[in-house]
Amino acid sequence: MFEIHVGIGSFLGFIEKFNQNTIAPQAAERDLKQIFPKDGILSLGQAGLLCAVLSEDQGGSGVGRSDFASMVTEAAKACASTALIWVSHVIVAKALEAAAPETIRKKWLPLMAKGQALGAIAVHEPDSGCNAGAITTRAQKEQGHYRVNGSKIFITSAGEAQIYLVLVRTDPEKGPQGMSLLLIEKDTEGFTFGRIEDRLGMRSSSSRELFFDDCRVPIENLIGMEGGWAEVMGKSMMGWGFFGAAAIAVGLAISASELAIKHARERMIAGQPIGVHQAVQFMISDMVLGTESAEAYLSDCAARADAFPEKAVINGFKAKLLASEMAIEVTNKAIQVLGGHGYCRDYMVERLFRDARGLTLHFKTSEWLRQDIAKAAIGL
Ligand SMILES: Cc1cc2nc3c(=O)[nH]c(=O)nc-3n(C[C@H](O)[C@H](O)[C@H](O)COP(=O)(O)OP(=O)(O)OC[C@H]3O[C@@H](n4cnc5c(N)ncnc54)[C@H](O)[C@@H]3O)c2cc1C
Image (cartoon, rainbow, N blue to C red; front, side):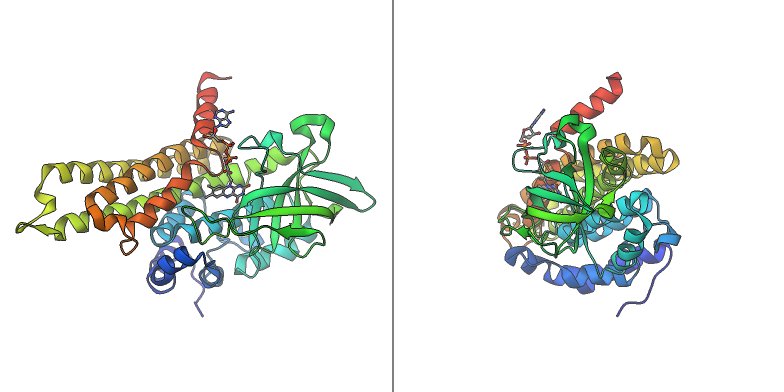
């Protein structure tokens, strides 16, 4: 059992030990066999980290985006899947804190803070692509409940989470204004799961489809107003989740850089370390600069978002785009520095590369982010 830690310094210290003792040793096996890191998530909850971003009156420690990003970066150094599950959980917790009725907050936030209940965010659908405005999952209002029909795909923590924040269409006539967020409990009748996707990376994060077949969801599980999904997302997924996603990328890149530098120092060929060659030095230098620039930019974007919450969304988009593209390049170069060893499962860099590859796809793809950032700059 872990003791409760307070303050960002001790939080980071805890994660470092947590990585060494709990997360890192089995990360490769979990990746291979697609095992969900249940114990790790529970440990983060027991140590008070899982929902540290909540305000103190909601069971958190009032941690801001900069410190949240530092904590997720640290966790991602050892296991990006664990970090991804954590970020998804935080998105749901922040949404409940911002917009759930008191009964829902009281029921779930204390359990979420301790890691006894896990949250998952369910936006994506097979036919919506990355355009959330094209979702078709329908929530029809009836006496005392919504009747939900539809499906979601690629949902992190699916089957493991107890609660799902689901984007639904409450009014098909109103376009984006007819979309809302419902909290749907795992045990709801008619709610089932598809198989675990056999993916390239983030393999321990339990990515599955969700199916809703005439699910009856109580009216009080509406999070925010009907049609108010964008506002709630702004305070949860967009306002916090993108910083978490960027932090995962930075954590992966830090680990990849460290492993490549160690290898450049230790790998001897014809009596000298490969790090003496300029070609290898150039790769190392690109990795160091890429990683450090993305980390500094994330920290800057998060600090700006903490100071001006109305600018959180665009800053999160920028940090995620830069960091996720960087992580692919840095982890790819790490494989090059390790040569054939880097291509084998015995060396961690191949997992780092596979995990990094998903980061330009999830939440919003790099293409959508580029469009959003350009539109904001132009004023469209
Ligand atoms: C690791 C990971 C975790 C995930 N976790 C979750 C989760 O917890 N919850 C959840 O809801 N979803 C989750 N997803 C799903 C993720 O959000 C989607 O994969 C993503 O939105 C992209 O959608 P798609 O895969 O359908 O790609 P598509 O929409 O089919 O896009 C394919 C390509 O076309 C481009 N494209 C499509 N439309 C346009 C356009 N209008 N303009 C320019 N380019 C365009 C895209 O950028 C992309 O390059 C996760 C995905 C991954 C990889």
